[in-house]
Image 1 (spheres, rainbow, N blue to C red):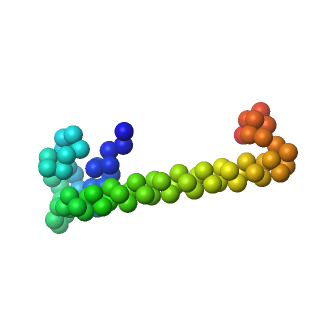
Image 2: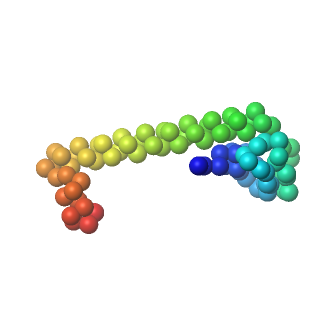
Length: 87
């Protein structure tokens, strides 16, 4: 399972150092922090943005794969043919 809390904090405060327990905002201990700590609302928004970016990347990858498979089919090739060639 991905640690979205840590990812969100690093997105908002890339130079920070911190620790926490059980992905619980209330347990965050800041060791190094430039400026003010992000609020739980800001972190939750960053988590949602990260998840949306991941979903978009997955959709883009799936579209690219489907496009490539379509081009292969137009050439009379399959993904098995490419695997046989080591590609």
